[in-house]
Length: 253
Image 1 (spheres, one colour):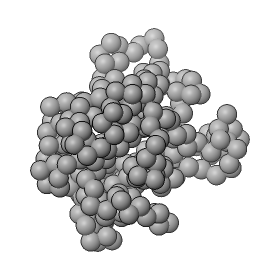
Image 2 (cartoon, rainbow, N blue to C red):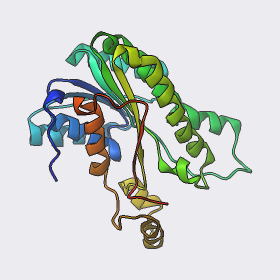
Image 3 (cartoon, rainbow, N blue to C red):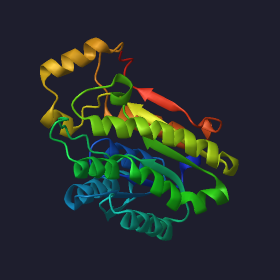
């Protein structure tokens, strides 16, 4: 399907974490389709470069891919600086990268817990820090990806659920602090998006049926459903929306 067009996003610079796989690929494509200049980081180079090739063929614009482990804050902030140098001041930040590894409680170590926080929570703060000088000059939109796993209190990956709950608190705190600079900060809270990773690891027919039974809307959620909401929050059409959490889960209870 095509993406709705927001004219004010044309020519804007967007930086996206985790853009090389899953929902992130739709973010990269959706913002490029607006005419935005997109820089993104991802850990694995081959699929990310293939995504850039595909987008360039389709839209005549090539995103800037930078290989980066987001747990390395120095490297992550350097990627933002490179995007700024290539395209100009960053106006849109999408903190998407995450890893929902399953684990039990009994055998989980402190090092594993810290690694989960360093992947799923810490980058959201330090990307915002790196983009702040640009956004102080001309305003901006920060979009943090949470998860309805925190709303539902799902079992089997407590560290991930904890990080996703904390993202909502971080979003509210940053929105309050950065609002005087015309910087908006919001969270997107997707439900179960059937990415390739989900299909490979957990999306059995029985699990999908159970999820749909809990949703008001009886269809699965796509990556594009989430990307469309990100475009809305990035655009000036949402100019007076900040500190909010937009839930995209088909009405799951």
